[in-house]
Image 1 (cartoon, rainbow, N blue to C red):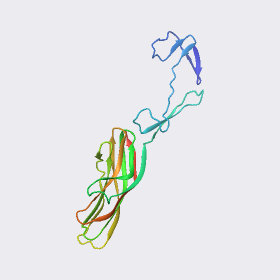
Image 2: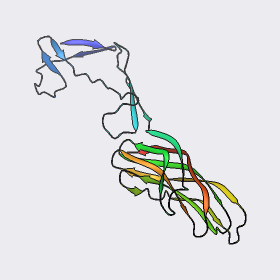
Image 3: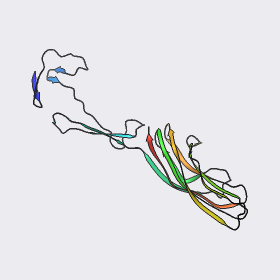
Image 4: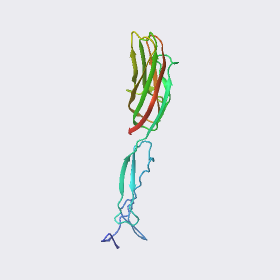
Length: 215
């Protein structure tokens, strides 16, 4: 049996090994040559629950000889963001309170960069010697604080406060966090004071976001 392709002539003589994985198979209609077609993953698609890279495959034009396939990869990490706010005036001191609206779901297993840009404000009157607002990111699914995410937004200390005072400040609470599956996380705030009465205590999560960095 003879033939040609791409300017070359080929000939096959002798028996063909009938093993299923043989490169060539003789049939009544002619010699079969195995053909491999590569298939990529569409943007946003997946072949498993753990993936942060898309594979692109561009096939050759019909009838091309030789067949040239182009294969490439794109980093496409999942991400999300939201915001929210909460007043702490009615909450007891040293009690973490969820920031309304500042909750996200990490959709799959992997390592995530979790960041909460937070802002706090507090007002106090005569006799307040310590006015504090803290924030952290909390894993609702596991019921634990995300390690290294706690931040002190405001620390006011004045042994002789007079009149009405107020302050507003910003911080960024975040960390790298690894999860084994879909996980709900949220921003929480707390106020602390050791003397006097403070008011208008508010925590804002101006931008609460995540981005997957690895599987």
